[in-house]
Length: 443
Image (cartoon, rainbow, N blue to C red; front, side, top):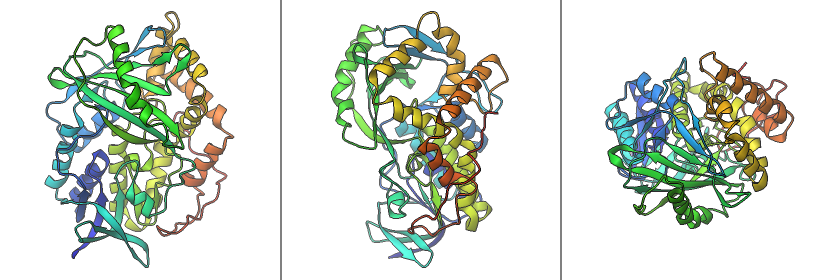
């Protein structure tokens, strides 16, 4: 059954897909929005929307009822020392995040997209549909065919759209996996725990305990697995031990966590070409997850808006415009933090040492303001203060340390100004390494 031709087909209605569909529909495009689930539905997540995401919601006039404003964050080091990371107001973002269960948040964004004019399909994108220009759409599992001028993949880390368009090099991808549970206890501030199962053997990720509305808290463990998915069970297996640590630290009482939910992450953009031909990848599908602390909701929404704006501005050049946006907005940060993630993850003793230094009683409070800006990728748009200067120094050191690595070459080849002529989706990308480096946002 043919449902007709759309201006845009958005596969996935999480934060990236719903924002993309909202912007497209408000811009006058005929939009098909496909998701396999009926909303509301749950997702494994820390449930925090960062300051940039909060600003984007304000810019689009999307009100999220019931969200809890969240400010500073506490980092608990391997030796139980604690450092408070302040949340500063920037020139382009507010000084707070929002906490809200993903089931509620995603449902609100989906409602905004449908309310804006997007046509929703509760179905799976099954078989790709091909034409002279490459990938043209998908046949849904119920047999409905959807074709469009632009296809936006917002369908998560294991993106069906990315796989169909041959936009992922699995040898390069930096995978992560996280498990999450809710607990009926209140928490005032979000906590990141640099956890060690045994002394000087850092867990290959971190644990969290985040506040939520209605007196509930969100806790979980996230870990990196580099280019393999073999270690995912570790997070679920170690969660009970992590909960015991939270109790020993006095951060959690006796309440038992609810059943856990797990999910994959794709970190740092590495290994995924985010756009080619008529296909644009957003959010987790594009690997837009912070390699240092796992944030992805703000990046998902921002990329969804950017992909939609690129498509509305000039569909024939949408991929090139969108890649340029990512090159200027996210590549400067990811191209230095993804190599750091890759280098540190197999070295638990080094990670333990770094955690001890950053949370040391004398040094930690001095580093915390700049660390907060750098770690949360808030340097661009930060107020011209001493913490921003410290964050800029950290970014400069990171750029210098990773300037000649293979990963930086990959970023430049994939996103740089000289990345090659546009190819049809489904065809091998024809790219070369540009002589022009990824731009430096922080200068």
